Length: 87
Image (cartoon, rainbow, N blue to C red; front, side):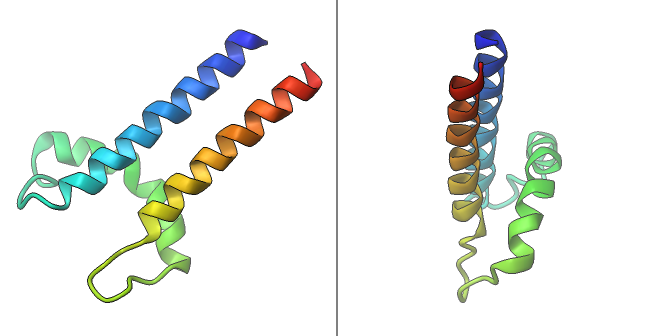
């Protein structure tokens, strides 16, 4: 079970970095339109869309990715706590 927990923790860690890279790509013109940017977008956008439905942008600033990363981290901590309690 520790290996399964490690796998889930690693997946959450990698996905968090994918989200951060996708957010940083918005600062560079044309970065999201590259083949790498489109790949990252296909991975990150479905998760971010959930939060964009409920959190509107504040002017020119979209805070939904920040909330999405925080929720992902809390989910990871909850998953780790669950595994440690029951397995």
